Amino acid sequence: MLYGIAAATTALLLAAVLAALIRPLALRLGLVDRRRTRPVPVLGGLAVVGATCLVAGAGDWSGVAPLGTGVGKLLIAGGAVALLGLVADVWRLKTRFLLIGTAVAAACVVPYAEFGVVEGVLGVGWIAFVAVAFKGLDHADGLAGTVGVVTAFGVGACASAEVMDGLAVLLSVLAAALTGFLMHNWHPARTALGATGSLFAGFVLAAAALITRSGYDPLASAGVLFALTAVPGADVLLVVLSRLLAGRPVLRRGPDHLAHRLRRLGLTPPGATVVLGSASFAGVLVGVLVHGGWVGRTGATCVACVTVSVVLLLLRVPVYGPRRLESTQVSGHLRVRNG
Image 1: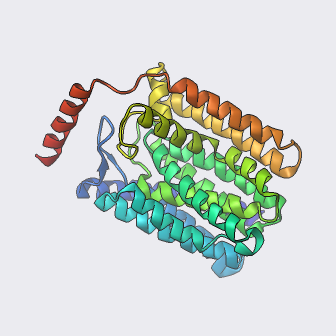
Image 2 (image 1 turned 90 degrees about the vertical axis):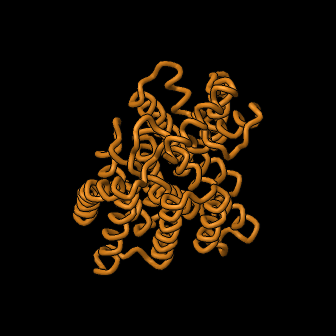
């Protein structure tokens, strides 16, 4: 108990300090997110990765809070995904390469003995999907961090219910590190997670959630896993449907995510983050209750129905400008960037 409090406090403070130290370096190197109205450094995720790995690794090395072989492997795979994200932040890798790389890392942590080959392969795809979905949430100040903290507490509760102490420790440390990072990422953000931090957080959360469902009915597990990650899933579903209906390339960036549409409806940037954070809390709460057997699997079905309904409603919010104006703005942006 005392170690858990000390570890969480250390991770929170360490992430906050590291984020402050990394920000000037990212600005000096020109590693910023130019999709926003102002340049925001994208290497803040290094603070989350560093704090999580150092604190959790120290507990395991000292023997005070051993993670166990499986959780240690998960942390190493998460570090590899973070390294892939760092390459993407520096050289702008395409999304398909991030999916492939994350899937390879996921293949190393899925417990095939409990799931079987077919379900294990599906699990690999799901982990990669959630990791990239968390990267998409980094488009709004504080959103990816807030959803990450809420999800980490929820998955940690599931791990504790299964007496997976090492996994619960890792998730509590990750939640604390994300909280420390949010001190710099809340609106107006002074730094962003970037692919480094968002892929790492999404990967660890998705893999941990999958591991907690080992030995459960596959259909029931699918419902719980969806409820735990409803907001990232809704964001991807909304973006893909919107771009397909508009005849736009699915992988082209655009102002068509959840937070963008809520802001079009009149919410402030912090307001949009609070609304989506609350929605994430509701989905995670249902997922935890279904996992613990306090609520039937129909609870997860309700989350899915509400999510699809919200996505269909938000599809009606206009987000794309006229083609000619949009092309002119993109060309002008490129001239400014190249100049």
